[in-house]
Image 1 (tube, rainbow, N blue to C red):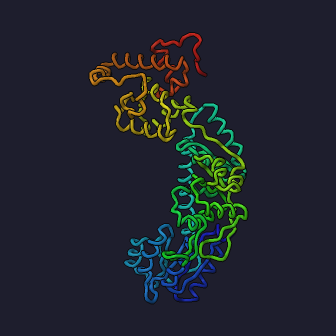
Image 2: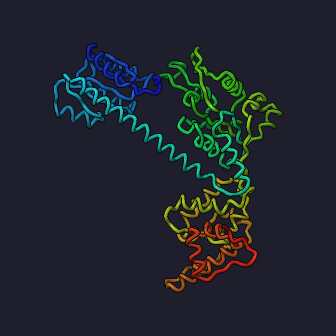
Image 3: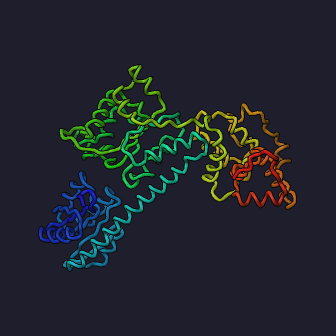
Length: 467
């Protein structure tokens, strides 16, 4: 196992013999061991390294273990720290635990006792790291589910994702803002053999021009004012995995030249350093600009364009796949109102289908979130939509009197009649497509079948019945 994959163990004690013993035991457990003879030396060490496990003596010159402990937790909140004490004081142990210590061990200790302590701390570090990875993975999987739709254009995108997910080929994703370019990049990464490796997303348009180089390639301590310790860049953080360069067209020409050199030589040179660092990353770039027109106009480097544009994946605008809108609407209803049976009226859905969505899927998501927050909590109507969405609609927003009259009455009979009429209207709107009707109503196919049978609703001959 390489040093990068082993848990890092720092022993802090002013006695050489104790440090040597702890490093021997730690090494036998597969830990990458480091030592510091004082708390001050350890704090200086933390400026350039990040140990996972720290074992510090309670009684040290100048700074005690109890003074050292909170300083470390502030710098490295996820590191596990244990205290060694020769006094066995319960009060001291309790105080250390309150300050964030994982545990304490009393000197003189037996080797097996130390092994057990370090083993438990190592397991805790691994568990925390695994949980963090799972949370990020679950978040990514939830985002992957956001690639919703059955239209031919979005299915073409998903087929390309399936073909690219295990390759190291550079990919250029194109499409308007809000179409979901980062979702597609994450799908390429997390659905293939790279899933357990780093995915680093970089918004090139939001980087401060004077800091772009240090953010991407890292910097050495003292490279500029405020560089109090060395820091690896985003390319180094993505080594072994994928770096996603969003809005690549926003990079200044000077940085385009440096990025091209990194892609060609597969190494970066941190700011303020004379040493180059090897990086091995898959590059996925995205843009809402026409880069081909950009390089012809001299606004984007031609050689960088062809370096990135090995495979192009275009994400269609939402107006080009309007058949996916009902599915997306109900996906977002489930997202913003989980467990609630919020439906959308046929008139409101028709408004959404007529609208051109210049902000694409992101705008649709915002509209649904707004409607859930401000709507009646039962059914979303035209008046729950922003004015821009229904401005050019053929439907008129009902007057307040009509809204009051349209509300369901309290009796069971009236509620059933309202349900029957709603299902009938939706069923007619989708020409008998049971799958689409169920999605628009927010109910399962089995529930829809029961309702159709109960209310004796039949689709017209020649209509698409759905599977």
